[in-house]
Length: 325
Image (cartoon, rainbow, N blue to C red; front, top):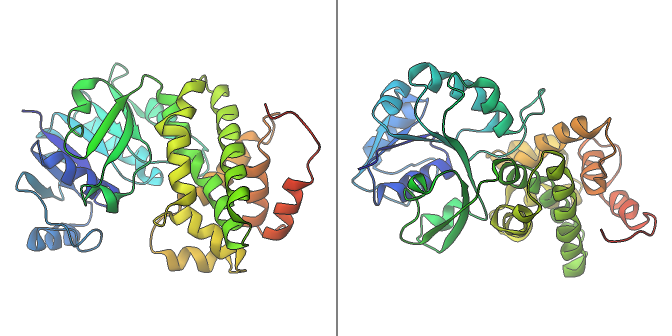
């Protein structure tokens, strides 16, 4: 039976570990030994999803060596800011283990997406690797509510999660699945701003639709398939993040519309809002290109206090008449 290591015991890593452990032996790793001790004692994750008991097949460890060496496949659920370090450490322990990542966003300073980061840090250039993404909140997956995601890697690995209430669809478009998951959070901030200002359903629908157009436009520059962006990893994930009650990035937008400062918003959230850093890094990346991403650019101007949320909306509405495509 395939053995699984889940690296990172945040909400999503914990939810995936619980899902996989319903059918396969799993080791969940966290860097903080105190966090591991607390989870061992509680047989749950008191910090995230504390109401859900771990399955019998889920073990815990603070040793990355143990997690990697006793597994057949590795699921990385650390933040993108820690992804390069984790990949380097995993590769130094065992460069042959397949790796799937679930983190979204762009790396600070380098402006790289996760699939670009892993490519730059592989010792074994023939390593099987891929990405899991799609419309999914951890709080719903652990409650066994129906969840469908996209996995860009072989179907043998997909079986880890493809059971019970979770359905996995396969893709060969690693770039597209990665970009869709990474950029949707920027549009979710815009959607939150719109909702926070009371602009209604029409405005939200317009932002989602034009947002997926921006994401697709950028994705195609990385040779991503346009079809990916009309699937779960594209429009599906975007819809959920722009409308769902658990969306941290939408919440950032709502609070910005209320006039709160970005620093106070981020300090009060208690969790990472990937869309903020993704917006900063994406704007740097497209600065010297002709890629048209008006929503992203207006969100950036709000985040940097260059303009108000109200002015950002005015700017988008006053753009020149053009064709939809």
